[in-house]
Length: 332
Ligand code: NDP
Image (cartoon, rainbow, N blue to C red):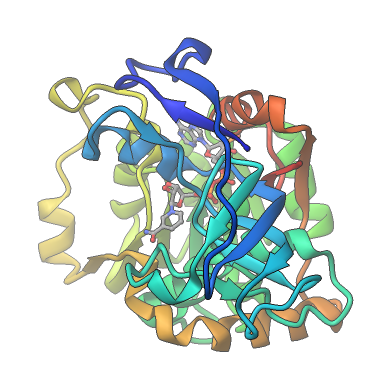
């Protein structure tokens, strides 16, 4: 088996030399164990964000969809597929019964009704659940309200925006390129998309949302979020999902952003952060709705596929740099 080990703490953008590909011999299976061959491996922003939270060296974790190749566990027969958090490795021995940590839990790939198995690490996996619960449970959107999403062309953001449309909201997305603007407006039917790299963000948002913003789903943090939060209406709701604009910065040297407390107080905003594992037991609810929306043409689950186990690093840093439209995933 081959796996990626992270040797050191990342400084800025992760470097190829921070990783080492290690070969290891796998022992024969014991009772309850399965041998899983990875087919789809996920690259996500939290792989960057959590680097400073764990001890190095460590095996690079992330979600993967894999095929059971050998089995000593009748619940997971040969030929079935599982979603696990075993990360960047091609073959893994798993005892599903021993996985107790929320993220570590191995579970059967949901019935995707013929949709691609890769969605198990995307729209019908952790990112889909993040979009669904992080938006619906925290923003509690009402029809006719104005919703802003940052990171809007990504795995989570593109789904949040489409769920907001399904719920009858007006949706404005912030993205990092004009091609992404086109995609959101033409294909995903966002009411407006804005390139935060080139636009006068405050002015563009004022034009797009003259009556103010009711819900903000925040994937990026930083000054962009300060500008958006300063245009929120009374009793607005902010779901703080991520802060990718600062993941590559040192924690002791974060970029400065506008102070938000006056806006939060005077507009009586609700600002709530979350980790999607909070709703782990309920993920199947999200998956059922999302599958239904995809099958009925209401939701598009675009993927940005990179081929090859050897290209995991490239796919990861490409995603951090904004190359992906939709979910970045690697086909092993
Ligand atoms: P994405 O598919 O959105 O990929 C990351 C995107 O971030 C890039 O495509 C890029 O798009 C954008 N980006 C990169 N740098 C910056 C920057 N400096 N400023 C603004 N945007 C930037 O990833 P995910 O959908 O998987 O994750 C989105 C967010 O959700 C992340 O912050 C992640 O940590 C968070 N998350 C949180 C979870 C939770 O439980 N709280 C669970 C899952 C994800 P662009 O071209 O538009 O810049």
